[in-house]
Length: 131
Image (cartoon, helix red, strand yellow):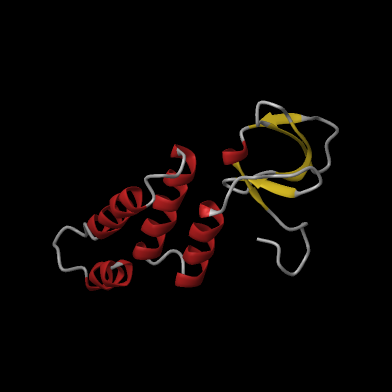
């Protein structure tokens, strides 16, 4: 279905350059398909799908984003993480009894507390698999 929406977008069958209609349809479809995700992750999945349909992301990148956001959020101390948008990376220091995680951003001595759903696993910057 997403590939078909992308084809429709490329054909631009509507006047007034409103091809983003198809990206919006894809985003809403993603919201329905991934309704069990927490709101932040669901929003990011919808955004990745819409960007794919609009031609900004290739299929592989979109699939990688959707899969990483669909993964379980069970994080452990020592695991490398990044924020959902990838703006900060770091390492989990410990998991609190209430389920929140304490993590330290790279290059900082600060300790941040976050919900596990707001982080995704990441590879160390510079590694071949870094995303």
